[in-house]
Length: 160
Image (cartoon, rainbow, N blue to C red; front, side, top):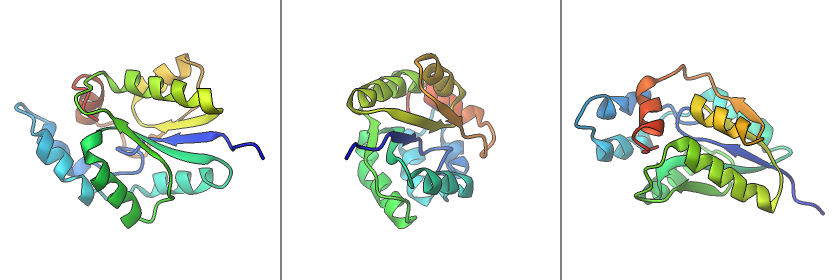
């Protein structure tokens, strides 16, 4: 039997509603520890849950986030607590400050060596554009409304 294609799904802004913790990084100095420490309290975005529940029917799901790797235990617990489908989780290596678009496209290219990547679900316009330019199909998650502070964290600060 052939492996199913990957459906790759971002967390922050797609599944996790991060708006309650953006104030930690809205001004300088940014409090990244507090920002990530509050992640376990993120509510699930219902639209993101619906997309994941649909994709998991005929794809192998993989969560891909720009969160630093050191937050893996909290992230796995959050996924379990919210009863989201069990799937591999890839996080940004600790200390990697490249823009999310670079980190994620590189991850997609590595995954595509193993098998086809059917779709990337992401909220970051720069990630979406870079993935499309690299030849990947993208489903743009627009349900949380654009958050300039989150975009800056992903693309300028290289933090999520």
